Structure formats: C-alpha cells, structure tokens
Image 1 (cartoon, rainbow, N blue to C red):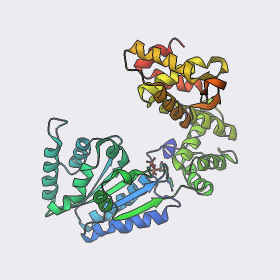
Image 2 (cartoon, helix red, strand yellow):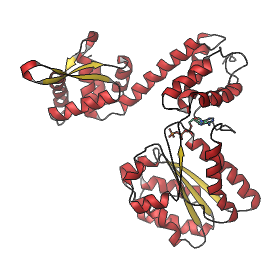
Image 3 (tube, rainbow, N blue to C red):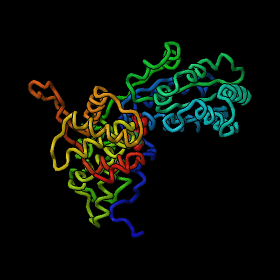
Length: 389
Ligand SMILES: Nc1ncnc2c1ncn2[C@@H]1O[C@H](COP(=O)(O)OP(=O)(O)OP(=O)(O)O)[C@@H](O)[C@H]1O
C-alpha cells in the first residue's frame, strides 16, 4: 500500500481505540474511580448504573478507569478481576454467564448445559477463586428487553451466597426508559450508585477531535474549519463523540481516496452523506419482515418522485405476503407501521383528506432510495422482489 499523505495513524480515529485521556469527562472519571477504589481496600465496590445517550463516552470512561484499577490492584497484590460483556453481542443469559465464567478461568461448553446449572458452576468457581470480581454489562438493555431481568436478579443477590469472593456490577445503557423494565429490587441494587453522562457540546467535541487529530493526521492536512464543522454536525446529533470521530475519519478517507493532500470542508459534507446512507442501509436491514415489505411497496409505487397512498401500498404489500405465503397484517396495523417508517425518517407520510371518502396518508420516500434498496436486498426473502423494481 502506498504511504498515506493524510493519515499518520488512522487507528486513532477508529471506534474501538481507547485514548489515554478523555477531555470533559473528568467528573465522571472521578466518580467511577471513587466507587471502584473500594476494591483496592479489599471491599466490594457498590454496584453502579450508568446512563447517557450514545457516544457520550460511557464505555470509554469505564474502560479507562478499570484499566488503571487493574494496574493498581496488581501492584498492591489485590486479587481483582474485571470482565466486560456487551449484551448486544452476547444477549442471552447463557452467553453472558459463559463470558463471565471464561473471564475468571472457567471453561464452558458452547451449549448443552442448562443455564441454571451454568449459573451454579459459575458461582461455585467464582467463590473458589477468592477474588473481587467486577462485571461490566454494557448495553444491558438489549439483554433485559429480550430475556427479562432474572439473571440480573440473581447476580445482584449473588454476594449473599459467596463466602470468599465478592462481586460488583456496572450496568451501562443509553435507553432512558431502561429501569422501567426492571423489578424494583433489581433496580435498587443495580443503582447503589448512579451516574449520568450528558451529551457533549459542540465546543467540547472540538476539544476531543483536536486531541485525536494531532495523533491521527499529518500536520497541516486539515483545512481550517474542518474540525469545527465535524463538531457542530455531531453536536446537532445529540452530542455524539462517535459520530464526530466517524465524520473526521471518513472525511480523511475520502480525501485520501481522491489523492488530495488536504481534508476540506467539502470532504466533511461528503462524509456526512456517506455516513447517513450507511445508517439508512443499517436501519432498513434491521427492520422486521412486514415493515420491509411495506417499505418495498412504497418504493415501488413512488418511482419518479410520485407520491403514493395507504390503499395502494396495502394492495401491493398484500401481494408480496401472498407470494411469500405469510400472513397479511390488517390495514390498520399496516397504517401504524407506515407511521413507524416515518418516525425513522425513511419516508414521509401526511394525512390528507379524500373528500367524502375520508382520510388517507400521502406517502413519499425521504431517504436515499439506493441506500434503502441496499438494506432491503440484504434480506433474501425480500431481495428477489427488489430485483423487479
Ligand atoms: N471525552 C472523550 N475524549 C475522547 N474520546 C471520546 C470521549 N468520549 C467519547 N470518546 C470516543 O467516542 C467514541 C464513543 O464513545 P463510547 O463508546 O465510550 O460511547 P458510549 O457512551 O459508550 O456510547 P454507546 O451508548 O453508543 O455505547 C469512542 O471512540 C470514544 O473513544
């Protein structure tokens, strides 16, 4: 590969890179550190519940503090173990327990053991190890919404059954309504300590980007205003540092692909569109089947910028469900799903009057059609219909 003219070290801008400093998170770092520092005295740290919108540095802060804590514990000869589980990736109780078990050195068969049995083995083994064990459950809402809070209930009670080890939980979520999914007892034990991460302001994002840019780009490569624009755009997206970093990285990549020697404002605008299209494709891809078929019907009926109506969409959607041999939802339900697609910003629907024949929705496509099609094509059940579009 030819040597980059733009990036000194592109990895610094990747989402999983953990910088040594996290500007504007001093207060949160102090709080997490003060809760976990109990471990250095041999006590069980309180459980900690962390809430904040996406990209506000929750995971980064916990990783940074736990990394330092591990170093300190090692130098003081304290038996401390920290485990990170992302429950979006490992969403079942079995997989969470398997990950926690493996992190304390217990080998787990990939399946074939009942979850309750695995839990007992985990508990026994944990106690035998005589450690302070901190389990970080990131994106914890994913697990609880799909599988309930039974595992969390058990884990918040586990210390009553441990003799030699101690266990603490850190739960992280970006869903403000998450605690409504919890049994009050689980909620109160999980939030022995609570911490909220506010969204970053544009000027805070600027500081974050500047620090990263020094390591990521060669000097003088960024045109004036590039960082400010990335920060301002991401601040509008609810103060999301991940979005800000993505914008800067993609802008750099686009400049590099063109063989340019500078990253310009125009590159940032192009990067924005690029990221937006990827987002649309991802959102479409993760929709349930019926929503995809409705979206496909809308796309098919709105070629050359024409608008369509609920009745037309329903008719075509019904054809697709019949071709697939699946149940057809009611008109009323389809109308609700059309509203959901509107909420996601994929389409626009407006209620209009049809005179004596009542009201209907006038529907048009709001996002990039190709990006939507890419998302639809990734589902084999829908892909064959996309081909006829
Ligand atoms: N204060 C900061 N300084 C430098 N980088 C930061 C800061 N805050 C966040 N970041 C970076 O922004 C990205 C997103 O941060 P992080 O994953 O911690 O967010 P999060 O709040 O856990 O988001 P989500 O809820 O989506 O998981 C990461 O690449 C992280 O390194």
